[in-house]
Length: 98
Image (cartoon, rainbow, N blue to C red; front, side):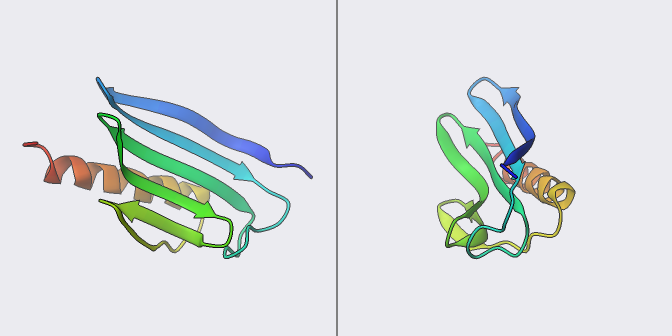
């Protein structure tokens, strides 16, 4: 089985503000993850990635917020997207005056 794309989209929020989401089902877990999904979700504001979720081979599931990396407890692709959207909303709320 090859990687099967499940989602590949770009969501435009405003001029120079967008999210890119990519999720694949893969034949076996990447090193550091216990599931058969590979993903990369990024929220970009004026050319700067301010939020990213991914499961890089060897690092497993994690997220980057304001340049800091932390573990992420992956459960399902649906929960991943919901958590990512929640963090986008939080980021927009905390940075609404900038």
